[in-house]
Length: 85
Image (cartoon, rainbow, N blue to C red; front, side):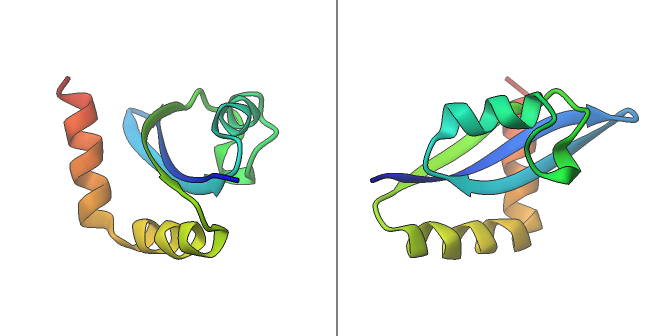
């Protein structure tokens, strides 16, 4: 089974906000976030997938999700790269 670490982006009160998570079904998880059935933080917003990485082992995905959540500098680079397309 594959696991994914992903980053979402939305515009909230004229500011771009990111959210990081992990899942085994990326498309279904994005639908949940956009239908207000995902994490409480993501409810009520329209999210766009801007980054994901695939892992074979769940523990590895969870460790890397935690690292990405804490690495604000890298998250900012991903956000800027996506917005400048």
